[in-house]
Image (cartoon, rainbow, N blue to C red):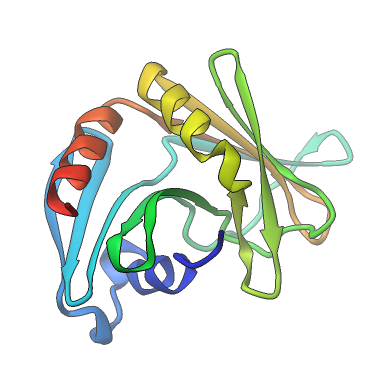
Length: 174
């Protein structure tokens, strides 16, 4: 379920790629989504950053500092990872509080795992396909998470270009 963490961590922020990921290249950009490919071993990702986000604590808007906020879909053929969604919150997530992702009428829970990385959350493998189907049919996704300190954040991701980026990554990682 969480095999793509190493690959997603290697991707990191588009402008802050680690030197060890030099073979990782952006091969396409589809509106709000970018497609990345690494050849050895073969790995493909689509990634987007939020178009908007907010934070609340005790029902009041607060200003907080966050690291990179991203949503990924990973394809790693050598590890039999076909389409694995993951959310990078930009802060340590509260471990006993699922992150909620909403796309139109679909709501999927994503689960943090501090043993892998406290800032990431993933859906259960059985929910991967349903989430991707919802994303392909939507125009916007909302991700609501709770930090380890109790701050609730709401991130809005545009899904414009998602389907084209997803299909390009599928093609590139066959």
